[in-house]
Image (cartoon, rainbow, N blue to C red; front, side):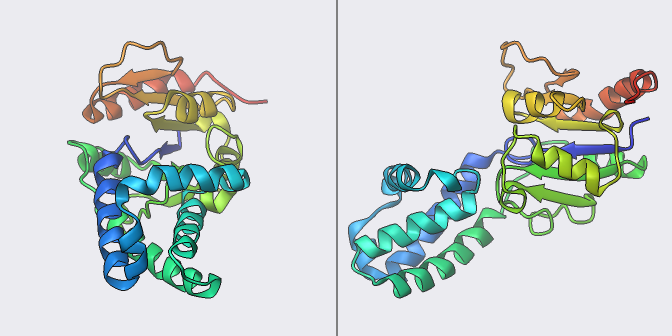
Length: 239
């Protein structure tokens, strides 16, 4: 029996690139006004190279977009002439500015209606994300019962830890859960490896082979596909 539906967030329920681009613009504008030496030295177009530099030095934080962003800001602020303590204080405030802007998402068509329909049908709904969107701040708190992300867990999908914690915290078996996401590796392969049902959200019409339980090309298709899986799931058991 299917009891729980989990969702990836970025590029599954909304397009993430426009959100992050706007949040970066907001952050760099704030830094230019509040940390002038930084603004004189860097532009938002410098972010990828700064990120590469930090990741080469600190690969152990690769699972956490929050830690990466904090480290990049502190690194760049020190390069701009701020001492370590100043860089930390400015970076912490800058992250608050970025994170607030990062929650300003525009949901894909049918996303909210689909989630409401599943909620009304009695499913437990949750988010499993490698990003740092907050289900309450983006406007999903009334629809989703829980949320886990890579920052909290310490590993990013497809590593099994996030899926395992979701199962343990909600007292669920793999065959009772359907995970839905756009990423063939992080979402589909990661959940498949634990015996969780999967729905691949293929909004772009990609023809790549993906071994999901089902595939949808519109979010409005999800409730019917879940019903189809639920019928099949009655015959699957974990010993």
